[in-house]
Image 1 (cartoon, rainbow, N blue to C red):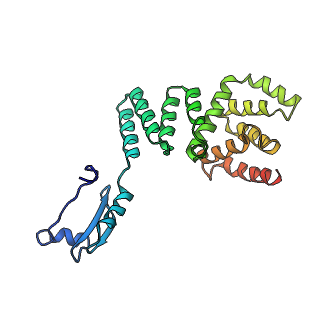
Image 2: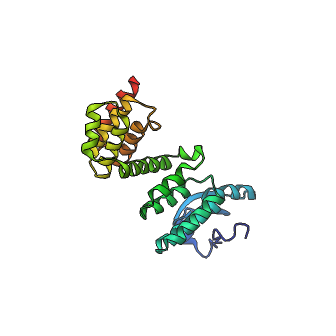
Image 3: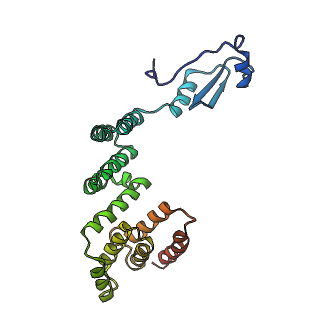
Length: 238
């Protein structure tokens, strides 16, 4: 009752259900087994004060924020994206400390092509939340999409870079266009040049973009293997 039905309490009579007791290595009573997703996640042997049980339950029972988040995702799975976004927005307002909620709201907006709205949502988050790994990755990804949408043609960008190799804006635009076109190698080459030349440009977009791509591709991908040491070298000289 104290937890609003968030867990099920079961009393097992070991005299009647000796096989179950042996299966779970219960050799004395009372013994309390905590199950989650069908697996034993914690055991308390012997009599303990209520506080011991509360401490364990707090580790495994979903918080109000998690429950609101789950309900929104279930709504989305049923195909009602608009209602799911309303629920996510409400949950984000009620639980502003949880970065997973705005991240999923942004992903939902991105799925509908609302890239600017998703970017503005994440960029408006408090600075500590923007440093969350997933939020930072989404912001970087959205930055590339929006930049590519407003960029000149590849030919025009290459001409700008040929005329002025330190034209970081042109390099950023070219990297963005290449990323959207799945030309990862040329995109990474441009981002590396930015990282080498101007760490301050767009909040270190060269480094951030490469790190995001390394995470997406995985450590064993040939492009990660090639460009990670190049980035490390560039940063050591900066």
